[in-house]
Figure 1 (cartoon, helix red, strand yellow):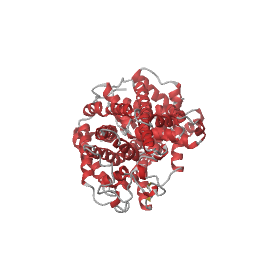
Figure 2: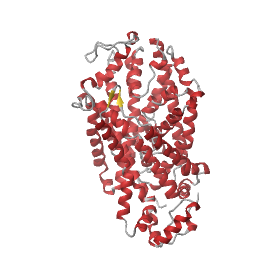
Figure 3: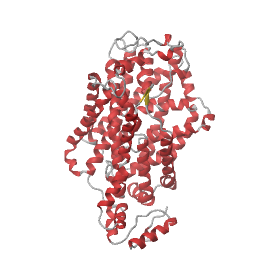
Figure 4: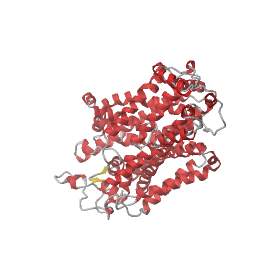
Length: 581
């Protein structure tokens, strides 16, 4: 492998912090702890760690090695098997779609941060202009009619921040609200100046954004465990119920969490690792970063449930009345708990700074995937990176404006449901098949050995070849089988909105067959010759010119295919070059 001149990270720690900052995001705080609590407590760690070992780590390692060896973005790396380049565009599109709504979450956190600089937090009482007659505090919220009541914190989020009461649904969005639009603009400016110079600037930003959450989580934990009821909350988080492991839904939720928590399939790991030095030990990086990601999820559970236990104690309600996941945890329940503490404004500022930093470096990763993927594919953009970065962030901002209207939460929910669900599982599945079964595990292992001087062991090769693809195929099937239309509370989306959502998901997945068809149609020669070019690394196309095809990397079971291909296409296939597993 002849490495070409390419920008590299200023320091090794810049890369590690960037990967950790991307992988450790808001879901580590608002999803994993709740999943652990409702799926058997400590027993949930059994399926979680099992899927981490057989799929999460191998796929993470695979993407780091793929990007580092080929030194290209998500699309460019597929010079190793050109027919699969469509999956590169799939993951680039997914990262772009996610940016449309993920930046909005950061703008909410920024709005809350600005609102926290007051002597009394605005989500404490029901006497604000945005409150409805149904608003009541926890003391009054335990009556028979509590399903019709809402807390001040809940109404602040939905009515004070989102102004969802001014919309009748996704058919009635209204204009962008200037307060959220301003916050979104600040987020976009932060992203632009973090990315415009490439990894030289983003690698410095993550020193703050990737480390700050750990400082804040530790501070919040030290405060949380001193609160009454905190220990009961932590006990509930860790309580072990092995009988829950008999429920297949527990295993499916653990598998789903692994798929989405590590950030595989967004093209970010490929983009980040492409800026590594060629001899960087990507194997060690994969072990370190996946371990830190999982430990962070587990650690954040102590922080979350210490405060949930306190809320349960303070309001004398069962823990499951206050435990929830998603935006409701970090924008309703947690702010409500913080509001009851002495010096609540200070604690609120600290908490929302943490959310801001958790979101920013993950958003940076998604943007970098899009930018690197496209400028590596379209070389003329290299000279205009700053302008192209500006174009991407401004385009993202304009689409995101739909999410900061009165009915923006409906657009947000639709994007969240369709942009990176089944499509990202499909993308990673095709990626794993392309590397393991077309490029070849043996060849891929040779590449890794060339970089780090150590060949992947049998365990990794087995996972890449069989276990991980089977796992991903299972997850794709489960994703389709368990699909439910999106909803927001009691609001059900109209059929046309669901159609738009599916068109969004299909638009990214369709890149795989569309590019394959395009490639087969534009290559020279008969169909068999074009197929040979399409599945052979670009650096070995001269072998196809000489009638040699080395790229069918399966097993002796498919000898008939070799014979058929040799007979029909009159091509000399050297079986001594076939790479057996």
